[in-house]
Length: 107
Length: 120
Image (cartoon, rainbow over all chains, first blue to last red):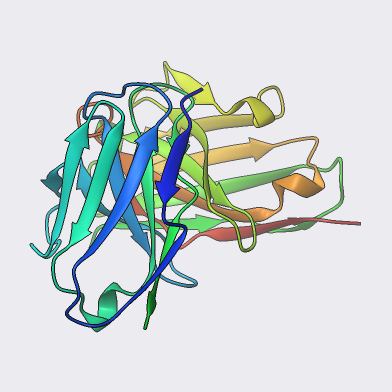
């Protein structure tokens, strides 16, 4: 199974800050990576697929990069609605696996 | 409006069974892979199962193999998860989702989730 490890597990930041979340795969997954945002009590929302392609309707302040084993999600200028938990997910092979999540909190 | 609505969750004793349903609307259900993902209370996301558009391919996480069965009825725009021999560790919110798998790899549309509690 491919293990996905996110860092940090939590981060505190302020509105307007630039934030980067990292996701590492235990083996190469090319660009088969997606990112999700989840707010408390809500279903996850897809942000990015194929490592760097923005899902329709997602603000351009979100961006993704990386390939192989190392990936990043960057939020260029945090907005109040961005405080949530973020997950990466590999789509290279079954079983599909998610990272453990990164909680983005208000400083 | 594009929508997925889960139902069928509830409280069940260990060893019991439950059948979850997911009703799709607003998109061509038969064109998409469908997925079940679960989230235990206070925990992260765990993929449970995938099913291909025509039901010809199904994949499961090891922890549910032999106990859970994913199925779909394209005529009814519905996805199902039959859960047998339930254990306490199956307690979670269960989400259904759709995907343009494998080209896109992400789960685009999600339902609101249905809670399954396994307890005596």
